[in-house]
Length: 68
Image (cartoon, rainbow, N blue to C red):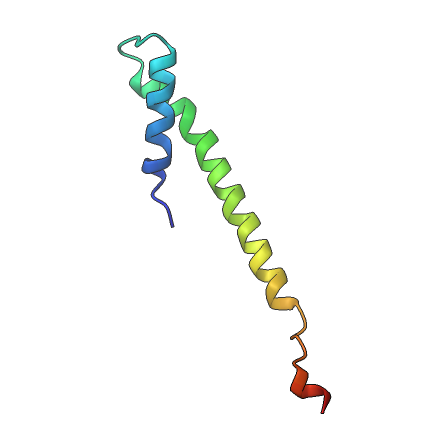
């Protein structure tokens, strides 16, 4: 599992650079980015879990030796 800090930090740095480096908005920017990145991360994990679950439900493949 990825540490959310590692996902949020580069986005906040990017926004800081795009905002012409306005000082004093660190916390505001973090609080703006955190729920978005967290939602995206959770959505991606849910999608991955759905794929894993669908693979578990697949019938086993037949091998060539099953035919004999």
